[in-house]
Image (cartoon, rainbow, N blue to C red; front, side, top):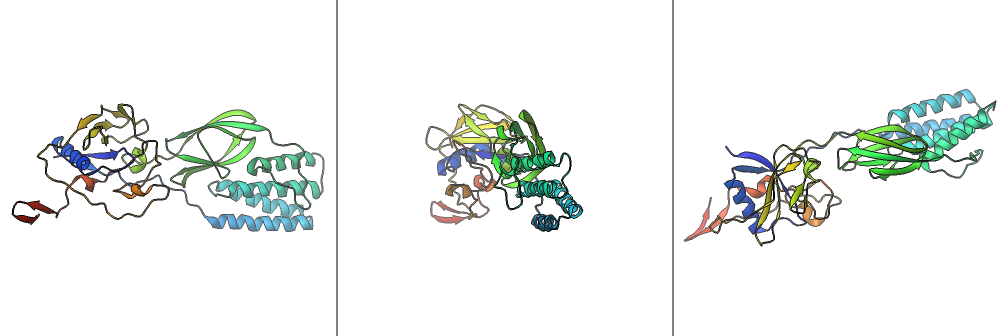
Length: 338
């Protein structure tokens, strides 16, 4: 029985007719069933906007407590708001809301029964707010800290490859991330959906952080989308699929370059051309909704996940390389349907 393998077509355009015939004959000759990558993604964290609304309500109550100079009520509502936010760093506005909690706390320390050390505590709270949202002009009844939070640089490493990150709601890339010393909300996303989130502490100066976020399933679109042609070989550093096939256009028209792979290890790219007597083979793409962020051709086949790289990646569907159950063929003597 033919062995199944996930196929990845690496090129800025889908294969033309001769290239498709070449891929089909390669699969038949090598006893391989070329299958589409599975559409499986890491489980997304639920984002409940009602929590953000509840924190907004608590901040309104905190302002009322400030006006009434009720220190006990102020601390109760601020503690409740902070606890809710610490439990939900995945909220897009978590950092901004936490900054407002800290500013309300700073105002309370200055205005309601200030005592020894309250000024320093208020400055720390205001600086923490500035570290989270970059700072703002003090409002009525607020007093900003004269000092600012010191600079901090985080050497951020994300695993798996292909994941993205947001720090305090702003996109950041793996590598050196410049911010301010203090507590921050870090969210790791996959195709825009949060899959990991936590509050982190960035000390002044340089530090490092490695985040192990949930990965895409092996042989899924997210797993194979980072494969690319590098010179005369396949760069598959991040791929975990146990058996897959990489294909790309060859220099000769109608020919393809094919490599068999196991996880991150791929064999050499070898040219393949359909035999001259190969059966005529055609394919019509199914209508698929366009995926945001992809060029028009990316709706071809089962392309759906992944960012375009320098050469581009097109993930070929299993239906591409197998004739339809019913097809019209032109033969001597007329039209034959089989």
